[in-house]
Image 1 (tube, helix red, strand yellow):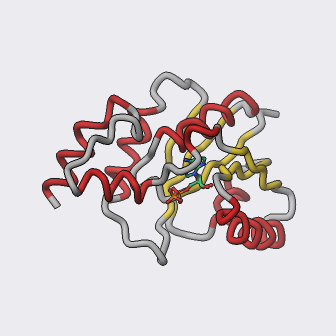
Image 2 (cartoon, rainbow, N blue to C red; image 1 turned 90 degrees about the horizontal axis):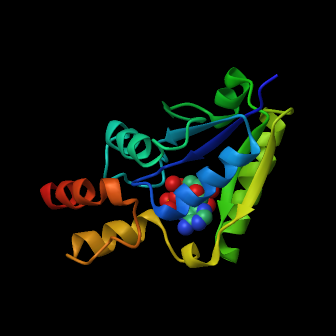
Length: 161
Ligand code: ADP
């Protein structure tokens, strides 16, 4: 049976740090579903459709990646998809506490699904969607932070807001 992994996140917008985790996950599993989730604690800048479009364009060269959106509980989503793993990226120590709580909760709700953490490559350690939004809004250069095919659209949409 094909192994399916889910990479959940806000992806508001996708960065090259996210892409690094997604492409590494795609080498470990037959199929990786990148799922855009709405985080009630974070105010989004981009709509779910825009985020999905950015992810699709950034992952077009990775054939076993699919993009989706889900507004419910992650545990329900992974159960529905028959996924064997949730793949998350770990940057700095401060990511750890929240990720640990989420992993334990998901284990309770989706018993057959393992959360797997991939440690970020060092060059992406301090990269986040918030940095992209902050730098972009203030007119800074974001080319080292986001995939090249979506850079201009991100800037355009940040300026329109
Ligand atoms: P953010 O924390 O930037 O808002 P998301 O909520 O979209 O990101 O995160 C989705 C997943 O991607 C999380 O597991 C997060 O730890 C991971 N991630 C985000 N940025 C990076 C990065 N630069 N390197 C590795 N993993 C990352």
